[in-house]
Amino acid sequence: MVGKKYTGKKRFWGPALLIAFSAAVLGGWIWFTWEKIPTSIRIKAGVSQQLSFNVPVSGEVYPDFGEQGQEAVPAAGMQMETVKETASLQVDLSRPVTMVANRTQNYKMNVKLFGVIPFKTVQVQVIPDEMLIPAGVPIGIYVKTDGVMVIAEGDFEGLDHTMKEPARHLLMAGDYILKADGKELTSKQELMEKIASGCGEEMVLTIRREGEVFDIKVKPQQDAGGEYKLGIWIRDNAQGVGTMTYLDENASFGALGHGINDTDTALLMDVKQGSLYRTKIVDIKKGQDGVPGELTGVIDYNAENRIGTIDQNSVEGIFGTLEGGIPENLQDRAMPIGLKQDVRIGEATILCCVDGQENPREYAVEITAVHLDHDNVNRGLELEVTDPGLLEQTGGIVQGMSGSPILQDGKIIGAVTHVLVQDPTRGYGIFIENMLEE
Image (cartoon, rainbow, N blue to C red; front, side, top):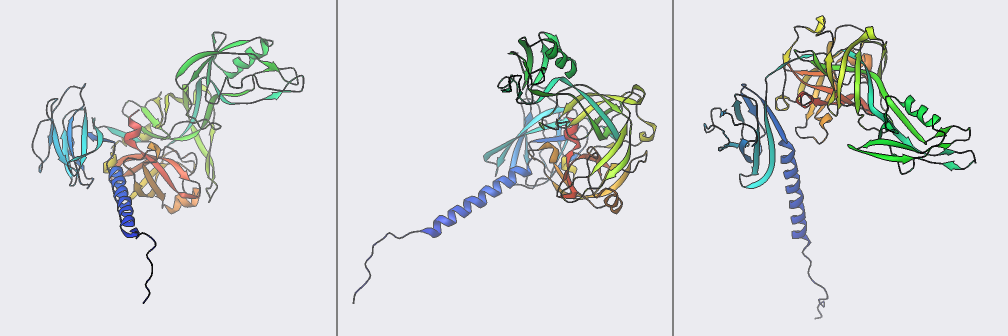
């Protein structure tokens, strides 16, 4: 009887595949656990706050050194302990944890998997328990950039019919030109006049790029028509329509839920000053699959129509103060803020004006997802418009509704920020606590 000759090595694919599968499952579980624990947690001073993350981790809470210590008292079910600069508080995040802090204070929590493996550091901030007025009213926006913004650089045809590019490798999109030959610029018109009157002489421009300020030398050249140019496209202002999110007791406001970005570069604009104006929605372009809708407002940019100042443009929105105090139609509407751990998947409303009415109205939405630790601060919430009236009027979320406050369980929890272009009934929102950081 003739047998087969053994010519190869036995391969153990089964165990290798099992190890790879187990590693993938473990990696996915670790990522899921990481996402469920936010990098920062806020609780309200003097208010019993429950944290329910339901993950197999424990944490050690201690004061953020550099701040003065204060008392923090855990509720029933936890060891009663005073947190000072020399002490800490042990918490088990596999079950609901209730904490009460008496005063505003910053803490840190070192989180460990299974109480052993170092996993994550969480910032814990105790903030004042304040009330906000959800606004939901349309606003006209005008801002001046802090310097003249470069939105692009390129070439042009010169007198000799060759292509010229005097600013190539010297200026770039996102730069801000602050001065020309030592003179501060207040508008792009001033820069254009300076270039035209220089007759091609070398100029010294003071530039701000990513926070760094420095000087460059550049020599304008003539185009085919004899005009002196640098070969750059510039901008010094932006305007549009948005929605005011909230007012506090001092008539300070937050709006949009995202920053004002340049339309060409998509970069956040450095704003020197800005103003709010009254506006009224006069037309609605309904959103459709693949085509974003839009609210059209009439804005009269005159002094009589100006209602406030814009002091800051940030990733979280625009912020400033109303000049005439809190409008009468918004008074007596203050409500508590809802922190991110208070937000639940389910029914909610958004507050906005879409049909020209003076007073905002609530429209039904559904919170479909809550991301406690999203890497994009403007997309912490996912929502879907369910209100038949709003769907009939706008098709869902449209441009101009950014900043519309999101309300749930009698609290203001966030603001609308973006719409899904392929499905205008769905969009994103920012947590109100992130707007209040500014």
